[in-house]
Amino acid sequence: MNLLVVSNLFPDQNEPWRGLDNATLLHALQRLEPGLKIRVQAFRPTLRHLGRASLQPRAEDAGLEVDYFWTPYVPRLGGMNHRLFAWAFARASRTLPKGCRPDAILVPWLFPDACGVALQAAAWGVPVVAVAQGSDVHRYLDMPFRRRAILAMSRSVKAIVTRSQDLESRLVRRGVSGGKVRTIYNGVDIHTFKPASRVSARAALNQPQDERLLLFVGNFLPVKGLDLLLDACAQVMAVQPVRLALIGGGPLEAALRAQAADLGIAGKVFFLGRHAAPHVAQWMQAADAVCLTSHNEGVPNVVLESLSSGRVPVCTDVGGIAEVVAPVIGKRFLVQQRDAAAYASALLDVLQNPPDEAVLHLAARTYAWENCAAKYLELLRND
Image (cartoon, rainbow, N blue to C red; front, side):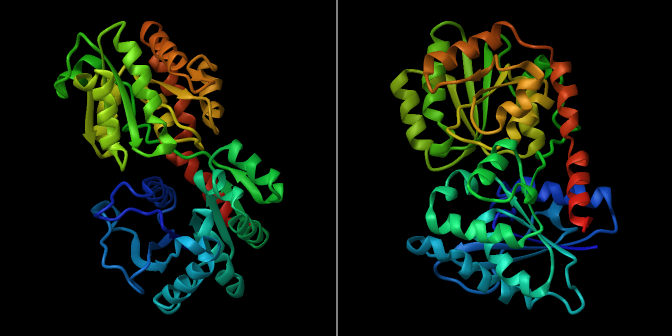
């Protein structure tokens, strides 16, 4: 089977974290079926360039055939960007080797990516499976032109995969046929993210043993609601010794540093930058809990990684998070309102009464990447 993967969300050496879950899925597919031939066309939106992009894949993606291309993207004409993407994809498709006609196309990100690919692939008669990742549903369904393009795309593709039941319900409520949508949760590397000695992990990371450690992993973006996390941590730090480590980066870092200083907790908040999965896993093993205070989500990878590491994810109850957390530990650590006192109370609860880490890890094994890849293969192969 020849699989063509098309998306703006795929990593390169400059942005190794971009669309990391999509790259991980492809590696899981190849492990499951070594004969599967995968080519990737990764697009980058721009106002200045056309054609190929001079980017290089990560070393670990060398086994995939990855090419990078620019695609025109005009912010003020956002509702038409899928047509520009279709044009860029048509140009890029001419670079495929002769005889390399795909049997299926997988497109993570609905607009403009899947909408543009669907316009072109319809003429080829090649089945397209689109993947909704989160914001492409939460935000774009409220934008009339983008919603119209997504609904039109949904009628021509083979299926739309959503990474939570919540995303599936949102699409169906807005007019996508329920028969076209299928939820497949993202996977988790249960061999990297696993319980281990908290004492040993802290020693390896030069973290004190006599303070509690809270961890955030993700992008410093408004949707992540990190102002709430800092406010809540300030309340917790007033009660007991706690440190907050933040792994990631983004445009809000300066504002978050200023907020921590204003709250008087700058000396207890540590900005660690971005790290590869093995180092993130070690920080989770060192932590007492993993924090997420988002305004909306699908089912973020960090929640599955936290469970697999035997650490409780303390989250705002948004999107599909409850779908994977509640069956394991109920809604005890899911905060219903955006209130710093309520979130701080949940943090204090988990610090004083943590669930059994073995139970959390066992539950997360259901979401192993191998199981996720098997579901994608079944969908891609079935007529």
